[in-house]
Amino acid sequence: MSQPLSNRQRITDLIARFNQQSGRALVDLPAWYFCDNEQDANECAMLVLNGIKQATTSSLYWFKANNEILPQVGDLAIFSDWHGKPLGIIENIAVTITAFNQITEEYAALEGEGDKSLEYWQRVHWDYYQRELEGSGYQCHPEMPLVCEQFKLIFKGSE
Image (cartoon, rainbow, N blue to C red):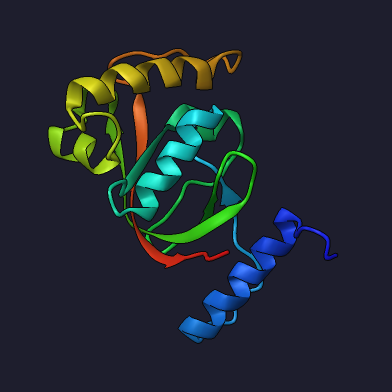
């Protein structure tokens, strides 16, 4: 009986299949899941796979607090389920810094979550940013700068 694949092996296999299909020669890609809890992470991943979720948004403060490099147009990333199983590869097609209170109905719809309304987006994201910034020294406020990433799904994993 064969052993189940580790997530690291699944990522390696996903990159190899992507390279074969795209003609690229990537060795590694960042891999992460959406959100901060299992239900939302898995739901968002399925929304991406179904072509509904086409954007994600973190606070600029999170990048600063964690000494992370800001995403750029053209960046590729593997998204996974909550348990780290890789599901596909996305490519950033737009990255902007926008204040929380300047997010538009159109952008909220691109996030693809809930009823896709701005009101829903504001409610769930405000709660998320409160958790994201806890203990960071940064506080949520209406003018808080957000890193808005629009992406396209360029490769679906298959297992």
